[in-house]
Image (cartoon, helix red, strand yellow):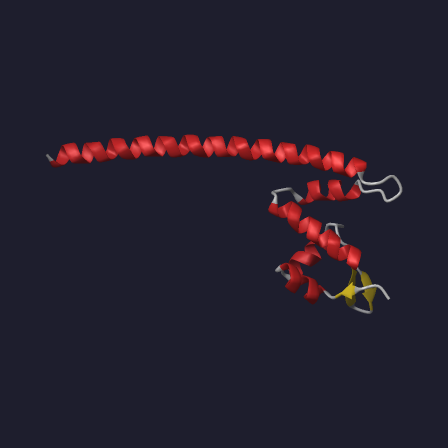
Length: 126
């Protein structure tokens, strides 16, 4: 018999809420089996959840994660999926670098403004 997991087990293992897991189901990213009213997750569902959470941690949207996961084809291999993922990684990295540059520029401006204000306070105190 293959390994199966409850929603509570997955939530505890990955440190997410039941609501988050149900959201990924609603978005079509997870499709657990049902035993009556209970959701039963397979080992494959567990792996998908791990990939979903990694994608979210890296800043990918649910739509982007869905695109990446949908490209996997067991017959032809994971080449298309990996090429798409590499492209998404490069896009994300470029965005983060632009954001870092913007943050650095803002920090520099704040440093200059703070120094100017401090100088004026010192001049006013004299």
